[in-house]
Image 1 (cartoon, rainbow, N blue to C red):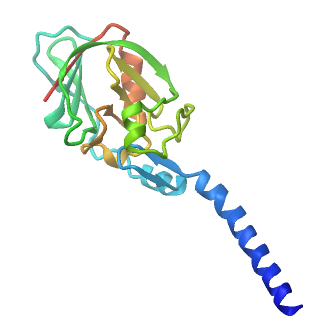
Image 2 (cartoon, rainbow, N blue to C red):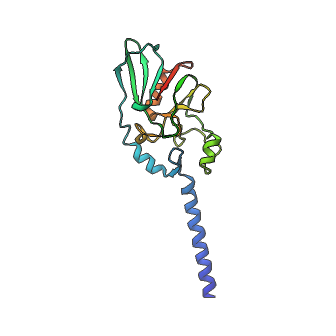
Image 3 (cartoon, rainbow, N blue to C red):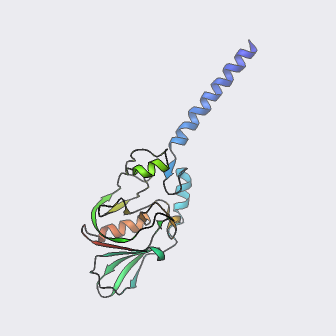
Length: 197
């Protein structure tokens, strides 16, 4: 009788343990760039540090029209071209080795708190990825997204500001949520995007 009661108590304790652990695991935030699930509290704590690269207006000579975007991948900077030889310079995160690209496209769409459908190739690399993630603070695309041509790439926000200045993404250009919101207010659909190596 004692053994049966002990076994039942152990089974009940295991079930309670699983029941309390499952919601915690389900609440984790997936980072597709590092293939890790993180606790939202850890992400929130990191967010307080902000971007290591501050947004600023700088001198910037170019023949591109105001409203154009230039991504200088090697600098880890994005320039939004202003009139009179100026630009707003933002710190960015770029593609890691094997995921960098360059080219000239146009912004074809913009979205606030976009949902995310991971590409098939990414889901093959990271089988635990969901087929779709609704928009919101835990979504890897962050607060805003600017869709680049017919590519799979976007200029988007991130809730991981410590990755700004790093080469960690799967090809997208990421800014802090604050910076991407600022850029989003300035960019028009049809704007030229030049991504340089």
